[in-house]
Image (cartoon, rainbow, N blue to C red; front, side):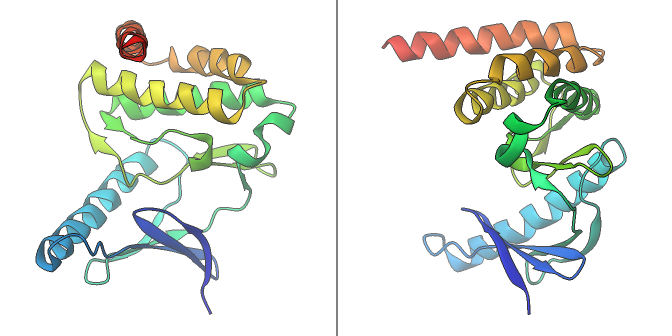
Length: 203
């Protein structure tokens, strides 16, 4: 029997043996035909994105896809979500730097994750690898703006989830991210994104 291990706004995640099944949820507020089409398209798009990302970084590999059922079958990754234990891990700076390098590789290949948070990262203490998972909100873009927003989401998530260590973690992340060929351009754009956010917050 499958065991539900996560439930989000877009999908239900079930564990089945050494695999994980991600099934997109029916949205009752959408017209049935449109809902069917969108869920099928997004399942297919996410599978392609994961395959592309998997050639660059550590992530859950695709084991199968069922477009009819809007399901992705992925390998199960041992370990815990970083959101649960990042603050307690001693080598958090090393991990953060590696995450930065992984995101740099994604961005250099025009992959935007769309939801970079420590809830979408699994750390395996046995292999000392961090796996970036869940590309459900991901897309392809060459724009520095989209890459900057990706990092902005990560930075805000750190501040919310890891308030005591967010600055330490973020600085190590940036060190790793600077391996990107466009790092300076993206980080410069990030400053503009953050200024816009502060401006909106004042009004």
